[in-house]
Image (tube, rainbow, N blue to C red; front, side, top):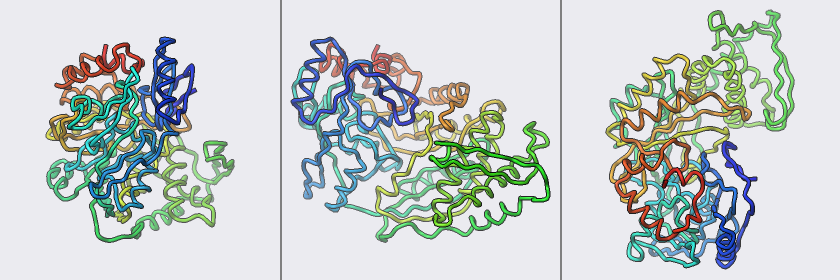
Length: 509
């Protein structure tokens, strides 16, 4: 049984393989051809869609994960397609090298991140496939094709964002840069300020992005820039100490209502806890309830539960930023209007002060995705950023029954010439929306999803290939001028459709 990381999509492959050599992959393809089976290659399984799913043959490339060559003079590295970027980052660091840009997650395979067009942010930087200068591809016929801008150039332009439908990517050569550190500065702002001064923010920081908290004006601005200073996490601001004091003062022990919470099994990472406190009984009728006081009360509970040996980082990152938030999001599945209070409260709690960090680049680019989630992520022309985001904000304000979890993450990327890149021939803004699945429970999201997709299409958006969307071939023919070229290469390399699946059939048929 295969499931993606978020456990939102899965399949039951007839046969599952973990090859260790090219010859073994050839044998798998020969068997598939003889049995008239399809083949899907999977890496880290992080794509929040069914792009990697199949009921036929699945190849997991985790055992083909070597660094094959490091060329310090050209600052290039050649790796097997199954290597995780988390391992590659460490190896590059040993040679004084780094990738110029990375996505938020590095527990993903090299062939997979280029295959779906993984991106981060930085208007001077392209999506991750723009860092690829060469690759080798094993086709359905068993041939190996070496591809670069000078060899098999058309196939190279297609294979840099291949969707897993052209063959098996055996090796990838990345253009690197000298190892560098990043200085990250995070500070609060408002949506109005950021959108009115978007060009200024883009010029001020090489890797600029911002997080909008739906149902509010609150925004967290994140600047990341190279620095000569080497270090680890910088000092935290004093604001959080005041939060602890405020939380403790919100309790009124003389009041006699008792809340008893049960956090069982995986809901608390395997820890089973039962506790009760004296505080007013909440009234979830939306009128007499004070959600802020209720939230403050639960914060105090987390303080009481914090293990004495735990660091402050554990408390804020996990007790509050994970366990508490997941619990409140679960409550909000019964009282959806609570989401508005959660978004505002957690902005004030965790994002309302300035924070600075300095670390080696990949440790700043990467962060831990703790929540299972549904996501959508579309790229629109950068000049449409303000209009599209304000229209999404207005849609939420005009429909009280439609709620949105925080954050809406807004990032930017440089134009490129990769045929199926969402940034093909235009500087782009990526607008990522999210709905968490607290304790694995699905939260109603259809109205939000359709509203968002409608706005993205209105402003010329193109969906992230790794993430779920409702687009079909007719949509892609309008979105991508080079779509016919890609289809021509695919038809040539895989005429029988060996590397297709349900997701890709919607793309090409």
